[in-house]
Image (cartoon, rainbow, N blue to C red):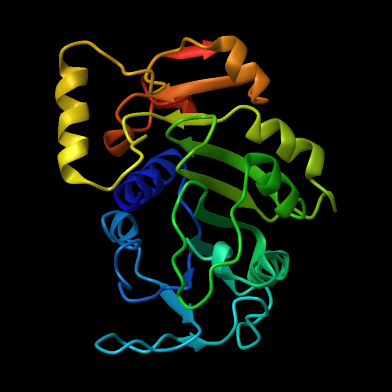
Length: 256
């Protein structure tokens, strides 16, 4: 997932610049991982938040609970990064409201959360979200881009971009439409982190077999059953690139 996150950020930045400063919530041990795509494009204004400082790393700019972000001023941030954080929040709806508060008008929230992933307690692991859950959770923000990684029936991860847009108090209906029209990243739909298994799957695929792992646009009826109205496939999930005019990455597409 982590390399998908970098390429997802690169894709978004190629479509449209994201405003500075960039605040990473729950920055953890690797403060520079998600900043790489920004640095490559000349960004310089970065802030960090976490519940604690970790040994061997610089202390965060803000040591606080992401569910209130109390030390961060209202409307002071252009972009919030929130990768693999919400599942660890006891009240993720409060975290979303706190991040919305610190975003300036037209500011952007970008992040991801796992769905098919084992329990990982740092220090608590509370939640897993489905696409409908993301639409509901972010109803005070306007979803602009939604991505499912792996098997659409049980995605490994969900990624999104949402914007603070106060022209409406409730974006629930519009968000539901966005999650029903996702990008679908394939070639990352493994059920294990085993390098050996991944190598075997790649070898089998090299001979033209897809193993039923959702690498093609078949199963239209199943996709509709899962609630997807339209989707765009990204066959090389870890190497996808932005296409011109804000359209989907160059890939096989199917509209139901």
